[in-house]
Amino acid sequence: MKHIIEAQQFSREFLEKTLFPLAREMQIIVRRGGSKCFPKKRMITFFYEPSTRTRASFEIAMDLLGGKVVFSTENAAQFSSAAKGETLRDTIQVLNRYRPDIIVLRHKEEGSAKLAAENSEAPIINAGDGAGQHPTQALLDLYTIQKRFGHIDGLSIAMIGDLARGRTVRSLSYLLGKFSEIKIYFVSPNHLRIGDDIKNYLTRHGVSFYETTDLRAIMPLVDVIYQTRLQRERGTTVQIDADFHITPEITALMKPETIIMHPLPRNEELALEVDQDPGAVYLTDQIDSGLFVRMALLKIILF
Image (cartoon, rainbow, N blue to C red; front, side):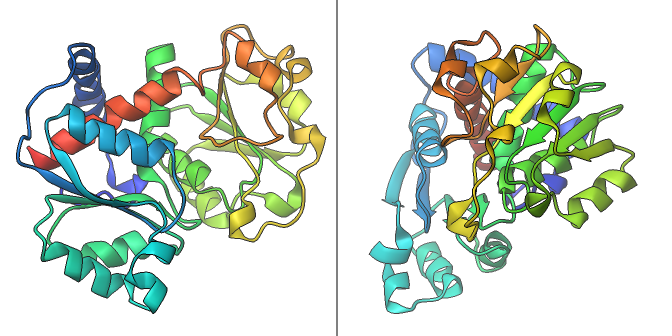
């Protein structure tokens, strides 16, 4: 594997036999304070959009594996030559001349990671391409679910919020299509429904899915609550009604073993009081999984 561009590129066999076992090994390495697997490897993190978790976890992952981040920018659109009109294609070709071993890229335009990979000798990791995909977020989400339940087959997942423009729900849906007897409940206002391309993909892969506006009705049915925020930076100007917010009143309806996830950052759609729920993993296990999975991916690509 050279580039990470989209969730569809991963097979179930890769997830279960390679990535997840290696992520567990990375957890041990973190407890031991890291390793020196890649003492001379160099990473560039090039972000045209803001990031906290993705950028920090990739940079810390590289450090824990003994490598180093040689160039990092959080707002390349403003603080790189992109502000002068340089194209992504030219930027990637220039960065390659500095001999990085890997480039982690976030860009506002869908398809940007694919374009970068086509113009890069160094491996490209898609850290989010507009409303397109966020494959490493989906991998860590799936790993979080697998760790909690011990399996993925047969689970029911509710994806809630801005499903029209949220890239994390797209990538996670693609990965869930690799597994058996999955049920997905897409819960959103009608104007923020999941795209037809995702529904067509799930249909082809035999995944049962349902679209609803009734959050309360599905709460007792699901094993995983995957809440998302309104994607205001992608042109969503309307508000999401409180009927789609997760509050203690809503979590009281769910099964005791249900977990609550969120790719973060959150806004009003996930109440602070829910943090105390035993099933809330978005500030704990889900964050830890991001570090372990991204360390595993770096080791797979760079080893």
